[in-house]
Structure formats: C-alpha cells, structure tokens
Amino acid sequence: MKKIEAYIKSHRLDSVTAALRQVQGLTGLTVIQAHGFGRGHQGTEVHPTVEMVHDLNAVVRLEIFCRDELVQEITTVIQAKSHTGLRGDGKIYVLPVEQAIRISSSEEGPLAV
Image (cartoon, rainbow, N blue to C red):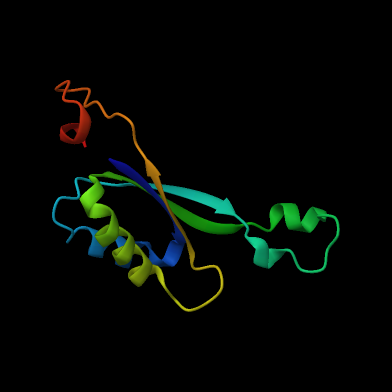
C-alpha cells in the first residue's frame, strides 16, 4: 500500500479530481487547503522579511491511499492534469503505508483501502 501526497495549484483541482475519478480501483482521496512557498520565492533576500512571512501561495494537498499497482497511473494523472508549464506547478510524493484498518468493518491491509 502507498500514500500519495500531491501539492498542486488550487485552480487545477477540478481537472485533477475529475481525471482521478476515472481511475479504476481508486477508492477515494482527501483534499486539504494549504498555504506555502517554494524555492522560487527565495530571491536574493538573506533574511526573511515581514512581507515574506505573509506572502504564501494558496495550494491544495491531495492525500490518496492506494494499492501499489495504482501508483503509476495515479501519479501520471496528477502530473498531466496539474501541469501548466510554469514554475510552482507542485510536487508529488509517494510513501509506503505499513497498515490500514477500516474502522466500520475491521478490514485490514489492502482491503481497508
């Protein structure tokens, strides 16, 4: 099992989620509104300024738990649908998941995802 965390631009959310709904075997996802900055914000400043502290970009974090065999398709869809060609399109991380438990039925492992 894997956890996919994707940070994308907010305005790309609709196209990404619409495409992810077409992935067979994907059981769901979570969307979290967030704010952050990347290395492109660094500029020539040696020390962060007060303005920089409040100058964060709106982003969306997608969290998806899935079976290993779906990772490539899901990450490909996210990358294709969130790509604008501009700096700051986002990042995708794939992490291992050791255990999953469905609270309602007590199913464990891949069945719980």
